[in-house]
Image 1 (cartoon, rainbow, N blue to C red):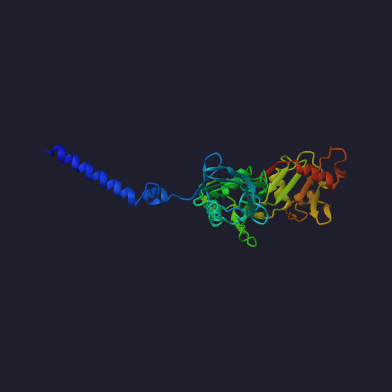
Image 2 (image 1 turned 30 degrees about the horizontal axis):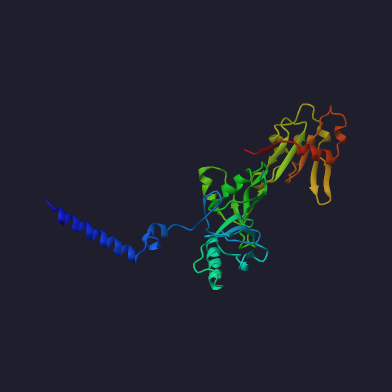
Length: 325
């Protein structure tokens, strides 16, 4: 059994060793908290949520909150000008463009020390608004625009923020990085299946995403299912194939008055379509192009054969869009 005096000696030695350790390595130093020292760099938003700063740098138009610990009067909200500078009390113009939040804090602290205003200043910078870090999502999406998707994001996140794709969206899209605007990367559009998850590539602040438009052929008038039919992989179809996709002609179709409306640089061009002869294999089955409109008027519709190209275009605008199975 250990005697009580001996226990007191052991405890005393432990206290002395602890005090010596603290003297050599103060509790406030990063070395005393290795787990804290290796945490990834983050910046806190106003709401207190941590957002990674990897890849996020300050640029023209960003709105910053700059404060100095212990000096309540030194708290200012300032927007970065087009030259990448901010105007701060006591310091004047400071260039911060291209710096992270942490680098900006250290820079302002050095400015204070070099001008002999403070010995050990502690500056805090909050990014109130990242005006330059948005991801532009354009093309065939429901809500084209610029979205502030900070931190680590993927293609699904950007398309989802834009409300998803439209029925006319193609099977691929283009991604352009800010640091390489001359080279767009073509990427297959994620379809949500497990096999397409490999297409859900990372995106970065400043990227531009353009969802391409698929070719569409329209069949309107006296057919069983009027609509626009998306050309998968822009593979062309013929008049008979388009009529089949529309589930055939109606019982009152005026086959001899069918028309083909095709967009040209001079505007929509309307040409007669020998649909009766094509159905009877007495005329060649004509290939269709993207945005072509096949109009099959009804024989009982007054003035059906007199509809102009503009009126038929308006009719095609309001039909449903179908994807070819």
